[in-house]
Length: 341
Ligand code: AOF
Ligand code: ZN
Image (tube, rainbow, N blue to C red; front, side, top):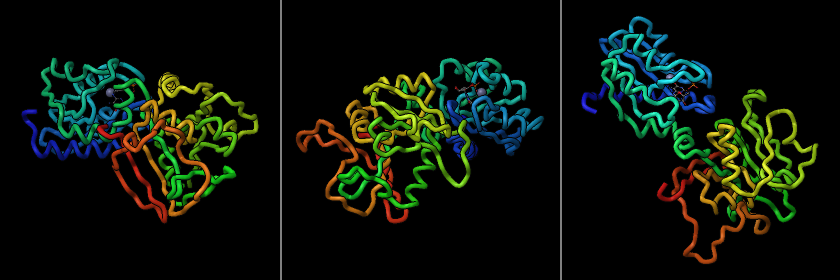
């Protein structure tokens, strides 16, 4: 990064901001933002990737800039692609628009699409990489994780009382947390590609596993519902209704679940329980983030949010990194990540 100025950082910050608008709608594609400035350094185009099959961020920004892109700079959060997938190569679009400098934050780990930087350099376009890389990584971390590791990013979500219980002794579990926490769950579900529960949860709670909010979310935009386990699901179960697609995975192996979901191009799995499924994923080291909604209430008896983790002594306690604490009405949302992750 030789010729990087504070102005470059400012435009890349704007590109990251633009990329964030795509969170939840680009599946299975990345979120990407782009700003184009003219030869005098004035902004003349902006774009972000909105949905898979739609124009890439660069193309949106170049369209807005038109002729004013000639001799200008393009700031992109991800290395411009060099392939014809659902759309054409952005490297060519940048070349044709007459851009003379391209600044991008993160190299594209997708082998089918990468190579854009090299192509641009071969056309004597000045290319710089690495500016605001951490921010650009953060906004697109789910997609980057999934492409780099070959499996979906896994968020385990649960709601619990102060004493860590998610159901009373009679298995009833409705309304532990309040309306703000529940609305937050729906917002976060909407950002994921799939929602998974175990068959036991389907049999006891009969959840619908759809995104519901003030707007009606159409079935094709609903996350995939995934039911893990080999117990029979009755035809009347709500997960079998037509408000979203459902995938039944009769396995107990979390790695196998993720393999199958990767085949469906799932980037972000939202794991909702119950305790057996959560424990299986935790024991396998396959939870990348925990979102815990904690209510100021006690049960004193009943079912724990998580099953046996094989911890026999306090020195084997499973600790996590506390990434965020947010108050939602009378409840608290904790966001945790693996230690060292
Ligand atoms: C996007 N949006 O703004 C950029 C992407 O299937 P395609 O043709 O849409 O190509 C998807 C790949 O293109 C994607 O995996 C990534 O490697 C690259 N860049 N993709 O969806 C964008 N710039
Ligand atoms: Zn592209």
